[in-house]
Image (cartoon, rainbow, N blue to C red; front, side, top):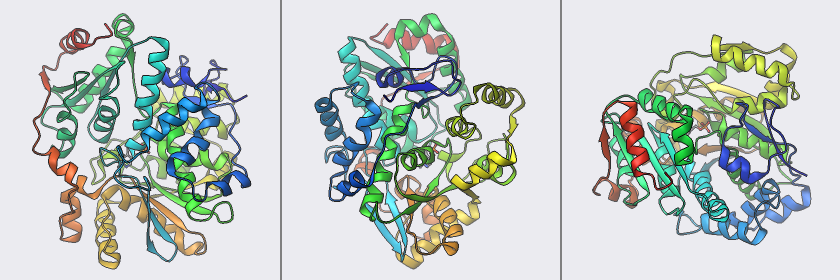
Length: 469
Ligand SMILES: *Cc1c(COP(=O)(O)O)cnc(C)c1O
């Protein structure tokens, strides 16, 4: 029976809904499944011709493992991956840009980034489970980019959730802020903090540490370490593989990577039997992962701004999940490494393990200049417009192509180019076409509360506005 355990080994035998609601394990680790479901050849073959929602049900069901009734789960999934939420019938369409080169478009959800693909389902799963348990929760998060708007869109109609998203006043892009603040729903609370993104994040952490308040409001999070987000992301790898001929043909994927969530979902799909040949990681100048694969040493640097801001990250939280597998669940050593990483900002792994890791992944960095070049040359040679995050992944994909021309390589397009109009226009000379819905957001009334950079004021505001308190 599939259950869930913590990467630190002190929490075991949890069921799916517990893992969904708790996010992080109580020993400080991340939840992983005790085994991987088996997508055997016959099942993979049956995916050909199925809708995205039908494939999603097949892929997700074993992970949920009867914790939610099949008919309820199927209805939640069908509701999520529908024409109401996504503006393309295929949900995650493939576009061919070369003989064996494809783009997987993951920007057809309500906020035009791939985060919608998991977050939309998460909102519905949360609401269903909370309803059943007669529980209410308060989700609090900090954002500088895509996560905040995806979380707000996912929760705005949830009866049992209040959501508070903090952003630094005057320090987000207009598009990104308006995607959050244009949502007019009584359970959605945007806070513009008179501070920086780091202040926002520190207050969220303070709130979790303030256990009395946390308990009172039923504090929860939908950040990228929630297992259910990984689970939901495995679906588009299966759908893309099926469309390109799985189980009879293998494909490779190139993934723009920050927190290691998305590429870990690809690895999970491979563990479950999906015929994936190579997993290619693209990083920008914040290249902690690329340096790791070069040297065997994980070493935190300082975060530098880049053209692909959603990957301006130095700590790839989800990597611990892969490390647990790589170290064959040697919890004692893993705990030591994670402690060293926390205090010394570094850890090393042995050459043997590095060989295994390099077998699973390869990683390439992409400078801002190379990002701009990639957007420009792709547009010039194919007429297709990519965003800067996609460019980082496509750059990585071109590094592996020559060694293996017979396997299709699929590059993930994780954001719509219109979310980054300046970078795209600079590279192509043409402003990207703005989807109607994104353009409409720019003229809508904004809803937010400005708060001083003061923890007590933020806490008091959240407690007074949350209906769970
Ligand atoms: C969040 C994000 C990423 C990074 O994804 P991870 O799962 O953190 O590796 C890449 N590109 C875009 C556009 C994003 O929004």
